[in-house]
Length: 202
Image (cartoon, rainbow, N blue to C red; front, side):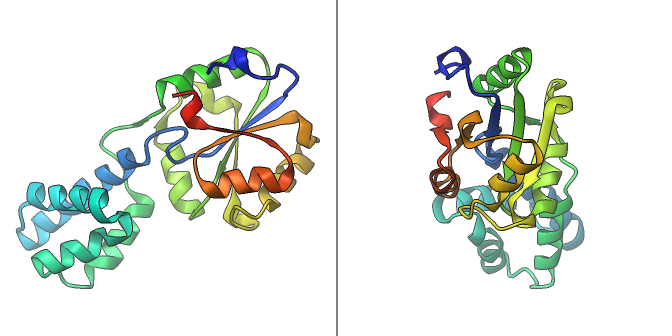
């Protein structure tokens, strides 16, 4: 699916961030690498072995289990959990986050057609802003307006969309939402806004 397949009467496009604009694992895996490097420096553990364990835990048990698994395997002091969580929010990544190519093409087509682009991010605003700042936007950042759902109510509550429409004088019929999470889909449904799963474009 491409921009030309979408309703040309739409004037605003709302994108979720994680796994829609870029692959979220690209952020998380770099944080894991940085944290493992910290532990190698302070505790003399092997950073590569720890990074591999964290990545494997992400794939098999999910990101919420990563620190616990590392603590269990290497007997890491609980005090490092604070460092891990802080690094997750503030990490300066070795590599920029890259936008999915098909999504980048879509964003560029929207800009050329002089339509509005919004990013609506669920989750911790500080974390999401850190990701946005370290994404390679190819000059598109000047055309983006970002909203953080938690500053109103987290999706699937539709408050953030109501705020967006009010502040930019938009109606439901003007919008297309592009996301991946169930929360975003339910939010679109609650607002009566057209919704597409990003998989249709990738």
